[in-house]
Image (cartoon, rainbow, N blue to C red; front, side, top):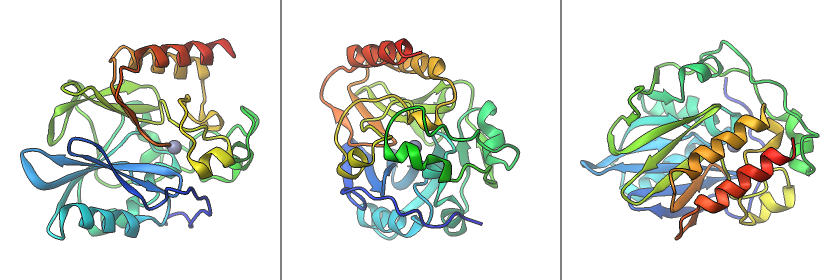
Length: 261
Ligand SMILES: [Zn+2]
């Protein structure tokens, strides 16, 4: 059974945005999903992440608005399996019987009903969202049709993209314009702070501290992403950042994150 609606909001909830060529974002309450067009077949759409619980209507309405009513959802790719990224999965799969590509073998137990995510850490960083985090669902979900992405880094339907493994997540990267779809490996809002989440104040941050099992690994992941020299950061939370090379800023973020250990 899908999780109940969670009363968490931001000013941008329901707002769609053009994120990069052929990539459209939608803020679902406090988390972003992305629609990527298949350049080889314009009405074919790949959805990256599945939003908050009870958001299937919002996601499908936006897809219709963007691509017309004869669009075809071909696959869902998950950056990771936290509740705010898989919330509409069950409803979406009732509408579209499509494969779901999941992260990496190591993350598979969380989406095949085998393992719950570890308990949240409300005191990892100050902030009201962090305080509320023990209330967030973290039980293993059971997604039928789960497929693992190919180890060669290729992304189904999307030839221009590669997937990059950062433990706990995958990111998607398109080299031609250096667009990085980072999931929560790096985000552009201070997700622990309710005020910042509501206003979507744009600021570069590491993954939500309350769900970060190992800060050292999270810092190493950001460093790995920095080496891609991304010029657009489309993240699981917050307003995308684009228009410059973010390598230095990501390296600084990784360093700062590692230094609080
Ligand atoms: Zn998230």
